[in-house]
Structure formats: C-alpha cells, structure tokens
Amino acid sequence: MTAVPALEVRGLRKRYDTGVEALKGIDLSVAEGDFFALLGPNGAGKSTLIGIISSLVNKSEGEARVFGIDIARQRNLAMRQIGLVPQELNFNQFEKPLEICINYAGFYGIARDEAMRRAKQELERAHLWDKAQATSRTLSGGMKRRLMIARAMMTQPRLLILDEPTAGVDIEIRRGMWRALREINAAGTTIILTTHYLEEAETLCRNLAIIDHGQIIEHGPMRSLLAKLDVESFLLDVEASENVLLPTVPGLTLTRQDANTLDLSMPHSMDFNRVFAALDGAGIRVRSMRPKSNRLEELFVRLIGPKGAA
Ligand code: ADP
Image 1 (cartoon, rainbow, N blue to C red):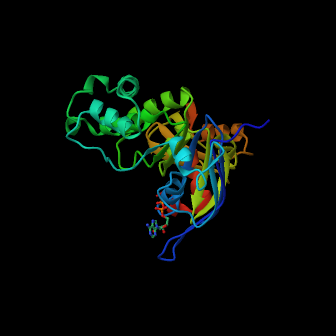
Image 2 (image 1 turned 120 degrees about the horizontal axis):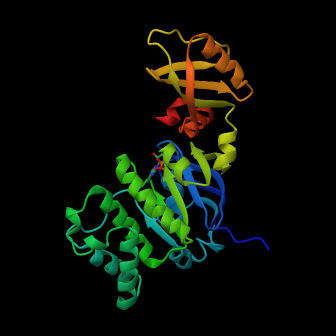
Image 3 (image 1 turned 45 degrees about the vertical axis):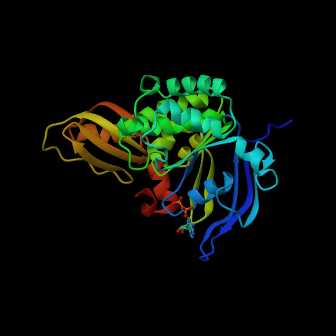
C-alpha cells in the first residue's frame, strides 16, 4: 500500500477576475513527513497555490487533497490538517504570547487546560517560554516570527505551511526560525515552505518544486536537482603572491575573491589534476577547497534565467 501524501495537487488552475492566470495546471505531490520547498520568483503563483490549499482562495479548476481529504468536498476537515504561517505579523501586539496562543486555540474549540499545555510546549519549542508573559510588541523581530509559528502549531496541524516567512528578515532571525522549523519537522509535522531565498531551501528542504509563471518547472529531490548542474563551483583557499596572474584554462572560470580565496567553476567532466597543474604552473598553491553553498542559485538561474535569482 502506498502512503497517502500530505499534499496531492492535480491540474490546478487559477484565473483571477482580472484575467490573470496565476496557476496554469499545477501537479504537485508532497510526502508525509517531508520538508518541502516551493521556490519561485515574485509573481510566480506561490501565494495563490498556498491560498488554494489553505482554502483562502477559490480554485478555478483541478483538485487538491490534504492527507487524502479533498479541499473542496471536505473543506473544514482539510483545513483542520493545516497550520498556516502568513508572511505578515498578524497577531495583536498588545497581547502576551501565552494569551495569543491560548486564544487562538480557543477559536478552534480547544479546551483551556489542553490549550495551556500546548502553549507551554510550543512556546518552549520556539524558545519563547521565558517571554510568555511579555507584551508581544516588545519582542524582537525574530521572536515575533517564532511566535507566529508557535501559534500555528497550537492546533497540532499535520501540515505546516509557511508563506515566505523570512522575506526581508536578517540572517540571524532566519537561523532562529530554521531551528524551530527543523524541530517541528523532526517531531513529525510535514512542512511546506515557500521562499525565494534559495539558500534557505537548500539548507532546510529535502524536496522542492520550482514554480514560474504559474507552472511547475522542476519537482523532485533537492539532491537530484542539484546534480543536474553540469557545472560545479568551489572556493579555493590559496597561497599566492599578490600580483600573480590567474591561469586561463578553456571551460574553467576562475576569479579572485580576496588575496587568499579564488572562486572556481568548472564542468563536472573536467579533471581536477588539470586545474591544480594550471594553478601550480602560475605559482598558486591550493591549501584547501570547499564547494560553494549557492549551487541552488545557479540551478535557478539556469532554469529560469537571471531574473529568477534576484
Ligand atoms: P507569488 O506568491 O509567487 O509572488 P502570487 O500567487 O501572489 O505569486 O501571484 C501570481 C500572479 O497572480 C501575479 O501575476 C499576481 O499579480 C496575480 N494575483 C495574485 N493575487 C491576485 C488577486 N487577488 N487578484 C488578481 N491577481 C492576483
């Protein structure tokens, strides 16, 4: 027996009243327990897709199932499986985190004792328990975003969906959120994260789909997508005198980042020994090398052009 996917989308279309075709027949499948990235540039259709899955936007055609539950036929049951973290902070900033979580649970009919137990669990997981009684307005930007996650988890959703949760947020705050999300995923909740931060998807997610102009242009494991790159990029830690000229090797791109770091891109098929021999011949000794971390960015550029990586 095959397991029921956390999300199954078939032939999903959305045409807004304005005539904009935001989704042009999307097929998508996300396995239970997955940490899945939905990547795409602005205007690609990510929010529309998330909106349809979470019943905030009406679809025009096609179907979507959450754990096998049809979102159109059993809307309420489907919605109960989902926790949604919207992009904007939308809690009452004058309330305390504990109140925010408990009131949210109350809205979903969860008894107060149980809500209290869950609030403690979720605020602890979000590293916010010591701020449970603080006025939310006084929390840092990162804490406010983790509070949004803790609140969404109050209904114990099997699928947590985050719509660009880290847009415009600095790297420290993003790391704090990543930690919280990893814990939630490790405890069994399926996560779908929409983002246009490629590094974020590469760091967190096992599978991904790339959406552009309302169509899925890639869908599969992160690893096999990255393997599609026929160029590998590395950072080389080198010893070289300052005025040394970088060697020219056909097919190889070599640029200087700083006095001791070179940026190297080369085809998979190229032999490292050739590269090292060329560097050696130019008086450059390689102390160490590491793969560049932004390979997904390269993939993105290859698939949809430089505009997508902006
Ligand atoms: P993303 O989340 O990837 O940035 P969206 O789903 O927000 O993309 O938008 C996809 C397309 O649909 C865009 O062309 C956008 O302008 C359009 N769109 C989004 N929401 C609406 C709406 N409520 N009414 C009309 N057009 C919309």
